[in-house]
Image (cartoon, rainbow, N blue to C red):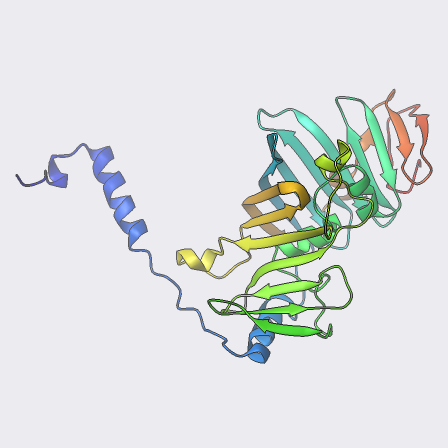
Length: 303
């Protein structure tokens, strides 16, 4: 028996069949290969490090799936602001409830948790975020740049590699003696595949916060996948970042939309006013004070 022709199918099914057929036949970009270590790293730097950051800022919408051996938590995040800071990060539960609002500026980090009506700040945005349990091991500014495909703040162009080794299936791994990134894996096409670094003493995994000890080196890994050109689209940054942590914990960030902006954000859009009656604690000094009136507080303290 011959299968029915599309002319006998409902219009909606015909359209779906044609859509799937087109997706299956989408042209793949013929990517150049770099099979020698020097050319491989040069290709990575030419695309992800050397180009100037022409945009003023960015707006990112993404989902974050944080998993431990015991539970999984999905949130929606919005990261927006200027690369030169301020930057804002809003975190919502999957059903829309606001969980946290954060602001990073030249003074540090401010984080406000509406459910508890408590705000925390630290003059070092990385330490502050890690004391609050945020999984990413670098600042919001570095995260915004990496999501946009700019790696210069984490892997500077003049950073000399201590060692190089070929990877199975192509590509190379470069190790570094200093800096936040101690290992960088680049695929055969000159794209970042994986980064690795040392966790600071300030960050505690969920297992550690529950009293478990972590044996072996305390390292983080960050894998990059789902590049647009793999789907026949124009080349762009990875749309999926997977963070690996000790004790089987992980965080998967899936970018839904990313728009770079030519003009700076209005400062009002990046402010973070605290409601009257909320409490404020500086993580530098661990002293809690009440907020007398709604105001904008930067990461350095009350203003």
